[in-house]
Image (cartoon, rainbow over all chains, first blue to last red; front, side, top):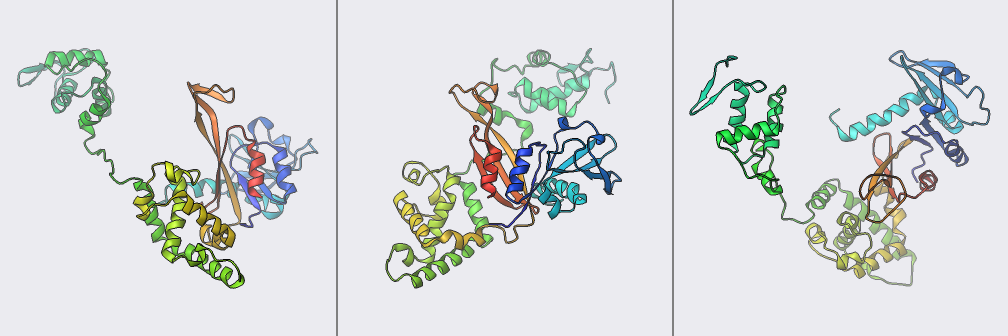
Length: 119
Length: 284
């Protein structure tokens, strides 16, 4: 009805099944990876693709040793922590991975604007 | 300014510095009690802590002062009504109860009228009815002859039903609701049922949809989940019980909106539903 093909779920879900289901329907899905699913940046075969405005580096790539996972990952390296986003292959086609962190955080801004329009 | 050892004489009461409470603080307590002699001690301490952050005083101590200064009140928990009335320090708070039923829906209705939402919906509805009339040679039913105002009233009755807590149209006959406050008339469920059926017959849903959903649905859909506690006296083994009768998670609300924050879809699911699978059905 709306023609929207790209979805963002704003919680750390780690369901490969959900990702596959979205992919089967031809939809893109972006979400965040659960903290228990990774240890550090070396878990991914990641390369630097850009930088955020605050200087945090953005990496992108698949898992290093999990070949059965269709998801693509974008990892933001903050000073003290990692922010790993995942997306389906369709999400990667629809939106440049370097934009994922911005699009994901825009959600919070749009919600805040609903509550505090004066912002 | 109050010295450390200088007593304060307030008419007949002399305030002395104590081990924990200074004379200055005692004056403030006395002032509170002067303003509202019936104020419960616990409330008094709360107010006192707002202006005197460092004060360490307990209920027993204040009660001793109350007795000493002649401000004792009857022991026991004050009645709920008395608490609101006696809360003299929150004088800006006004407890107002409207005599108009469902005033929230009435205000919402006024707002929708300002947005010209109904005129847009009815315009599309009438166009569709006219198309139907032109295409169909047989069949004549009341919807085809309704005046614009009748369409608005009945559409509003259907639209606001959930806001009155009405889940099924038959509840219009048995439940108390504020429809009359909003549209200045009432409807029997049979009338609305008939209207609803005739709208379906004309296949009005597709026609009015452009007026009901945002003009620009956007490029991205954000999906949020919200869990609401479920209260029951029945025994259940689902979820985490944090309080007697309260089970968490209860119903799962799924809210989706576009990048501008405009709602695209809202649905509530029962606690035992497989939400991810249902999300996919909903998105389809």
